[in-house]
Length: 382
Image (cartoon, rainbow, N blue to C red; front, side):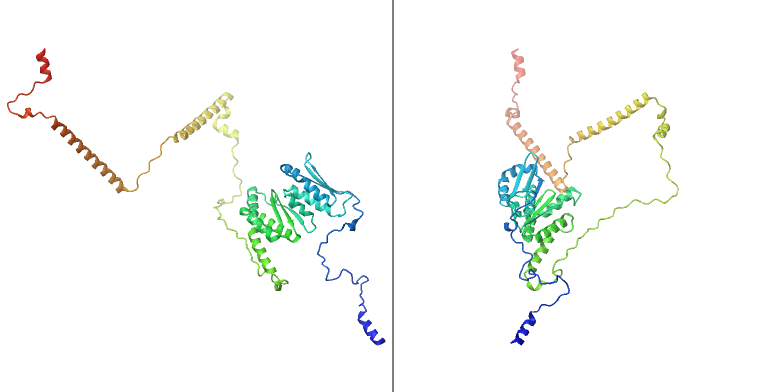
């Protein structure tokens, strides 16, 4: 029996370690998830906070009406965690501070993030979610990444896409809420998702990679994560490699290099030298002013003549387009000529018919006297 007890006690003996503190710890257990964020229990800090901590941020003027309407819901959400908040419309600030009822020491940091998100135009129902322990936020500044304003606006539009389709795809794949507002991008989600969002946004604004390529990579990673055999392998061989294509511009003709000469170029004549050459230097002030006035009048006359020519150009009728086909023009001329000839013939026939109706048959009968005319009748009466 004693031999058996010695055999049982032998494997239970601990192995000796060299280090003084190198011993088994109670938290070195594989069943414990060290990455899990446990919900705060008020019993961990029953005494509360020793000092008052407060954070303040500037509120945008255009959102004052919205903040005023939403502030009661924000105040109620912060009151549950023992945080006091104040909206000062005169100074344009939002302030959060701890109270005697505050137990969680990290909730003041979460409250600071809340007022930051509200100042970046994030809707209040979405911003209040930051008070959860598993929700984090990141505000990415993109205004100073590009100097050219037009280029910055164009690249920022790449993040949104047509009808915000690109932004919605990024939200689904990263599991984060993303809001592009002015010179910043506000995002809310897990640490992993926020890291992906920051990389995508910076690559887009710096023109390193278009967001659509990041979406393709994230979709492939999502499919590869479903395969348990590829869990511990490198995925680079499966992911697409996108290379930036720079289109080479045509080089313009440079200036021809002049032959090198050790002598400096000749000195250019000064204003006084030019006046001496023309003789203007010796003129009196009156003559100089008269000459300047004359030159000014000549320039004005030239300018007025040019303006008059431009105004008159608007009244010049445009040239009528010439028919391209030569045959069609000749055919039209022949048709017009034929019509004119036919009209002339018809006119002659009408004249002949009128003459036939006015004929007197007695004029053609022999021996018959012509009827006396009206003039002779008048003479006889007289």
